[in-house]
Image (cartoon, rainbow, N blue to C red; front, top):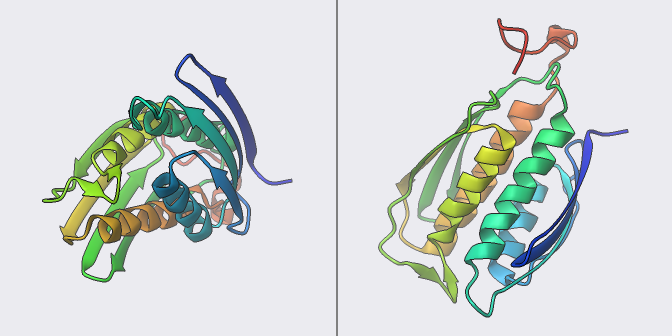
Length: 196
């Protein structure tokens, strides 16, 4: 049995259902009603070697903001639930990933100290019809609910799709590293406090 979580959340603005297995193989079935987010979340599952089933419906006739933010909320909750007491995890993760001209780094600490430092400066505000500024809101919600310190740095990149793809792949790889169970810890929580 893997480290799994199920989240069902319904508000007046969105309805989201998530099934996450941290110890998966990268399989995903994602339908958020926002094709760009479907693509990013499929990448996240594949490169993080997690299995993800996710469906979402939101008030996208207004805009994508509520849905994207609530996706971050639900995924943060799922990550926190799937990790449980965090016994034996490596806790820290880092990945630097290129995507054509884009180069992004993600560094995280699964510390129950939610902080987002998002240093991504893009000249273009859209990728197709998608507002790329919403990705900051996605990660802000995810780290708040997941209890994660997250640094996202863009070293280079101009094409928003390439940039965000590099970020999601780096996030996935860093998350896989941080949530991997380290045998040498013998099930201990990786903190001198004994609690995360």
